[in-house]
Image (cartoon, rainbow, N blue to C red; front, top):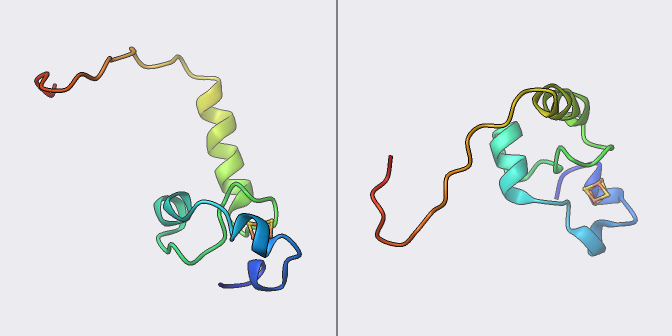
Length: 70
Ligand code: SF4
């Protein structure tokens, strides 16, 4: 576990947050979840979320087992 998680009081509660999200946003699953305000990637992550929240939603596509992938 890297800093700031290593020395955080919540490390045994949330275990550094989402590993998938850390990998997707930072390129390293060992990094702090960028959703955490203590993450060095947090502001960039929040900026993307803020920008996308003001854009129109993409069309909703239902997923079904066996349905062809578009
Ligand atoms: S994700 Fe944030 S709150 Fe959780 S352990 Fe790491 S630094 Fe602490």
